[in-house]
Length: 119
Image (cartoon, rainbow, N blue to C red; front, side, top):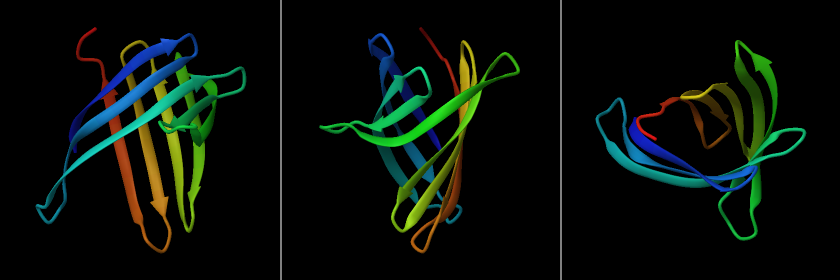
């Protein structure tokens, strides 16, 4: 998987997140992908919202301090499938996500490493 993610501040404590790129399967098939979210910082968590009207919660991630950054986990039920996610933020230029997707229709892991390419 290769792609680009753009994070832009909308207002204090609210940012837009847009990703797009290409996935190539083990069988050699290639797919384009894109997705938009909103990241909202609250006193208790980082809320990740689908970029819809009205916004709908994807995951609420309670963050803890770890190795000079932050880490947390989230859960989303897209019945009957489940998304269990781990987030690791290494400021100022990197973060990582791991999504474990399981259920009768889906069974895969997505590991993504992000790094800043320009400001």
